[in-house]
Length: 228
Image (cartoon, rainbow, N blue to C red):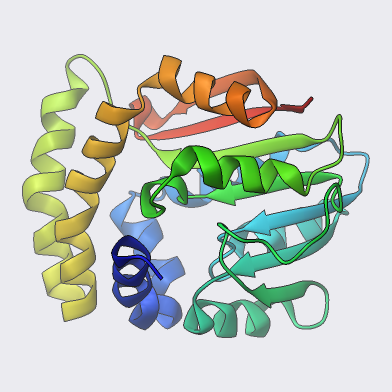
């Protein structure tokens, strides 16, 4: 396990029981909206969807609500415990790393993943591994935090530098650490992978990007495309 992976696992391990509620609060209610939009990019014709970095099962629950068969994958036992309480036996949940998925090629009709690529050592290789398990013609869709542009960028920088750490500290030591981590992590990822580079990463992995939507003034981005 790499240092980056160990850090991500340790950072989020204690958050399972409070993740949904606090995540919604810290995003001013936008995170649930972003997840719904992510799921709306998956064709409504049903099919078996792999939800990677499923966490507490929020995206998986929305996929189920829309009539899909769902398998969820996450590396955090604590997060999966919360997902099992939410989903019961309606979905298959697997503890595994996104970097080495325990499934044969072309197993799934579609795939979703949420807040993942910032936490892996090689985003390109991880994306290639995700695409490997999707059948040709299937949809791959991603939700990630974004960096607002123009007049909203200074406000975003201020919130990440001051607001998130203060809010996290008021909640718990674990959320304090997350509040300190998120802003620099998001900023560094988008400096390394601006939108043109991100599209190139997807093409190299075998997905032709069909769309990218900036949500909530750019605070979230959803990108989707078809497995070639």
